[in-house]
Amino acid sequence: MTINKLNPYVNFNGDCSKAIALYQKALGAKVENLMKYSDLPGNPHESDNKDRVLHCQLQLDAVTLMVSDVPAERPIASGGNAHVLIEIDDAAAGAKAFQALAVGGWITVPLGPAFWGGQFGMLTDAFGVQWMVNCPA
Image (cartoon, rainbow, N blue to C red; front, side, top):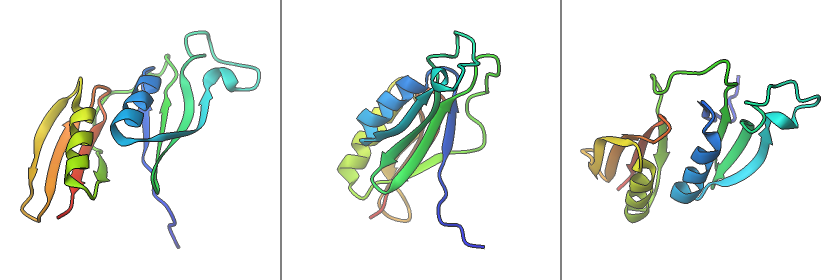
């Protein structure tokens, strides 16, 4: 078996469009393949879902992050047992991305020197997504 890619896929409760805007600003994400529930053939979803994001692919250089909203009638709990780890090779750019992701959320481990070298920090963004930011030495 060969695994060629592993892409995180993050779900939201109706605020995916706002999260996309944050990730564009904080991480320079480029939007690809954005589809709304209203784009489904026959539009089988109720009006409260039509503006929700059905699927979106975000390109962060060579990395892909996929995001979507769940239907309003099936909400999900925020947080959990997963983090999205992002490695940024420039400490200043890493600090800028870390602070931008933290706006409206909370920092669990401030970005600072890591015992393995470089900088490391953890936060939960305004949408409940848990991030780890690592800036190797």
